[in-house]
Image (cartoon, rainbow, N blue to C red; front, side, top):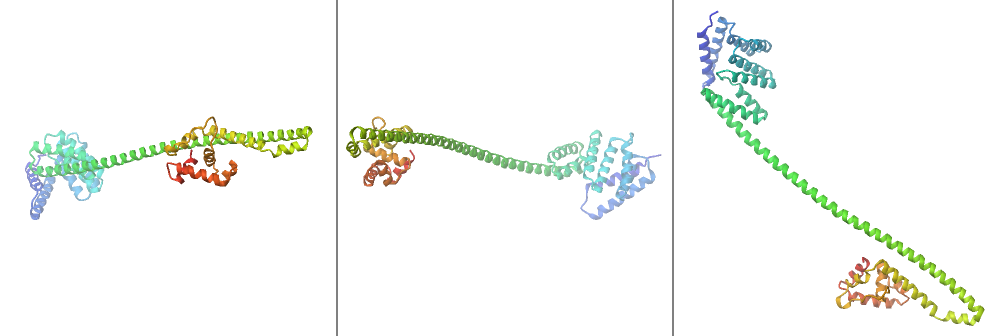
Length: 379
């Protein structure tokens, strides 16, 4: 069978003019009608060539017979005698059929296969790589789209396809601009993420420092509680020892009175009871034990009190473990006895005497009168 070269040549010339585009809708319509006429004429003369079979598949596709079109195109792709150019064009037509059916993934797959055959062919004249790049651009895959359109542009320049140069150039600029915008968005996103991460790190550091501060405060509170427990235990022990000592002394005093009655009679007993010596010695012993106990629990009490007084009003360090009257009043305030009447009862003196001493100590203070006794309570 002779191949109708004249009809094929005229058909391709018309298709070339159609692909270049025109500003006149009438001219475009005429070219399409002429191209369709030449294709039908060709199909009446030739049914065996790859070109004719491809035209047949295109006709089936354009008339909506997609299954028949895909079957025709598949037979071409499986034919070992069909060249790379024809397979590239056939794969492109299959991609177009999938586009018409709405299958975007298959469309991209067959465009990629068409591009593969284009690279194997000597004349890379099809639009597969360009179309694939545009699809990837629409899907947001800008890196691949940029690479593909760059390769397509190089093919256009090497092959001097002037009709495709404008579209490929515009597509390349469009994809490049989109890539720049995407890169800018990535940088802004990275900047935002960096700012958020930095803020989170700062917050974490702040929480960590706050945690350490709270831990230290908790340690101090635990230490204070431990000290308070030790103080409480010492107080309880001293109170018990003092109570036992008092009971023993009462028992000894009772026995001594009985002995005095036996030996010297009642007048001698009356004389002993009217003498202040016994009670004086008992109170003296009580204050000695109190002073010793208090200074044992607060060994730096006098130094801490002096730190709250003016320089010319410092209290000399007592000899041994004995407190002066002023220091005993402050010691009573420290352990929670703040009422002057109760302090007077504790010291066996009048409330006026306690008031005088408290006023004198407040006047000696390096702070306000109210603040002075508050600081005494915290020693």
